[in-house]
Image 1 (cartoon, rainbow, N blue to C red):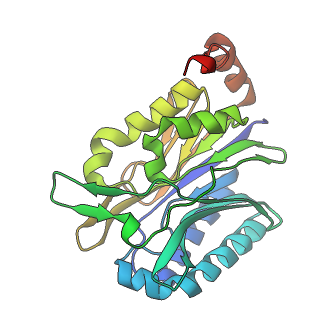
Image 2 (cartoon, rainbow, N blue to C red):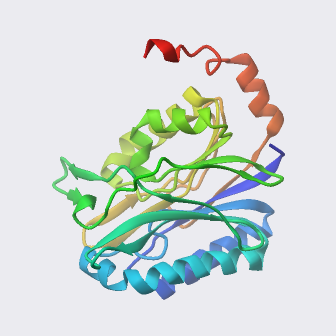
Image 3 (cartoon, helix red, strand yellow):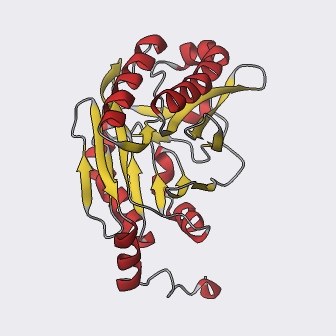
Length: 273
C-alpha cells in the first residue's frame, strides 16, 4: 500500500440516467482536480427510481454504466468504482446489483454482484423488498490489488451488516474496504456510521463508503454522510448531507502502525468457531 488520496462521492441520483451521469462526472472531475487517485461512486449512481422503470431501463443502463466507468477512469486517469447498477438476468424481470472497479486504463479490475439483499419492514412505515426484482450474487466479493495503491475488498450497502463478509475480505489481504451504499435515512441516522466504524476497527482496515443523500423519488430518502475511516475507527472525512465528496489521505504507515499496536487479526482463533 502507498500513500494516496481517496474520494467517496456523494450523489442524489434520480430517475433520469443522463442527469445522474452528468452529476457523477462533475464530482469525479472535482475529486480528480483535488488529487484523488481512487474515486468511488455510490450504489445506484445511475438510477434511483421505481422497480418497473429500473427493469425497463436495465438492458441499456447496464451497458451505459460500464461504458461510463471506463470513459471516466481514462479521462481523469483515476481508479474508479461504480458502486452498484442493475444488470439484467433471465427473462428481463430480474437484475443483479453489480459494482465494477476500473483502472486508469479502462480495464476491469474487479466485479461484484451484491449477495445480501435488503428485505426489511421499517418502523417508519417504509417496506423494502430488494429480492422482488434482484437476484443475489453467488460469489464472495473479491479482493484485488490496485497497482501502486492498495489491496481493496468490495461490498455493497446492506452487506455492511454482515461482519463475516469483511473477515473474509481482510483474510484475503484487503487493506481498504469499499462499501458504496444508498442507506435509508431512517436506518442511517442510527446505524450507518456505527457499522462502518465497527468494520474498520474489527478488521484494522481503512473504510471508504460513497453514499446517496437526500430525496430521490416518492418516499425514498437516503441518509448521506459518505465517509472515509481509518483502521483505528477515526472518521477522516464526512461529506455531510449534501452532494459532494469525502476526501482523505490513506497512509501506509498508519495502517501498519495500527495493525502492530492492535494485532487482533493475528490473535484470532478460527479453529474454535
